[in-house]
Image 1 (cartoon, rainbow, N blue to C red):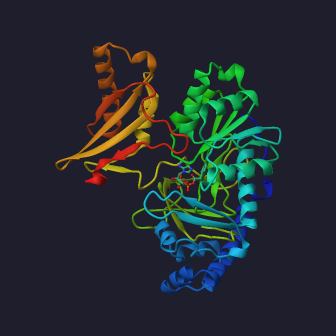
Image 2: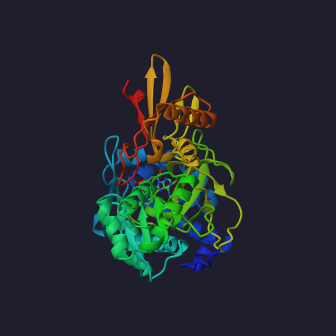
Length: 438
Ligand code: DLL
């Protein structure tokens, strides 16, 4: 295993005592800041009968109430800001698929924290100031582009602010400018890998790419192997959410065994998604974050709705920061079909384990009478999509059997032509749930 450097070993390799003291001090400051400056939080704490003085150490965090995305929407746009507008220097917003967007505000200090966290992440990925990092995340209200951008500059590497889209141009830039790293969503990385092939390039011989920094959507280990093979790179997983900061809250190191959390700024907990009860390390549940040291919009016990577990034990890279497992999807991504829990990632794993299929798929859920049906559209590899109807029927049966054995419900499989499922330049859309329209 290659020896990657560590960006900030004082923090990333700190002892438990050091971390706990720092987290406790920052939690006390954060709680008194929001109590003073944010009416929403003051009311919430009063309702729960808690005063800032009740929070003495990080272990007291469980006394504090949760914050939900709906709380941010109810206080739209600036109601949970803890700094006056004169100190806010950046505003981002998440795409409001259901109604109003969620708006976040950052001070200059917050932006410095963000760049620090992304620089740590990029160092985990084995990058340094000699690298050329092409950022293919969208620039704009979405935090992906600008978040990565300033982290690359902080690292001292060269950033190519390509933004999302214009895929042919992305390939040309990777080739002509010798980009050594690509940051984008994993689904877009696959799209780019196809475009590299279509442009007649061999990723091993013609490109200098060696690292991928992929996140913003769930992806499986099988997808990671596929991208690594197709682009001849090491693919890293970067996690974050705009409400809490943006990309860089956590990232995996060369061990690719869990994502190290910047826990000096974002304290993670895992709770039972139904009851909110804290769960012990090693158990899967909903990830919850509390900001520590953030000024503009600190969040207290923010329910991410993302599912994962905390990985117990130390990582062999030398960092002592807590690790979360690869994200398993969102509580609200989970489809319940005829009473059975189904995650799109389960289908992705099956498709990637088969040589005839592509990892491009769409889950379509319908309700016929009282019965839910799940149809999975699957792209077949070019060489298998022939006029041989019998061959295609057999392949369809094989895919259906493989998926049914994993999901434990019956499904319809529809083979579709190569490249017919819409590609995404940002986050992929994998589910159409027509039941919601009924
Ligand atoms: O997606 C921030 C980001 C940008 C992260 C670029 C990584 C890279 P939002 O648009 O607010 O922010 O979406 C946050 O995306 O709650 C997860 O459900 C999902 N997500 C983000 N990273 C990962 C990941 C950005 N590595 C939501 N694996 C989160 C799985 C992820 N899901």
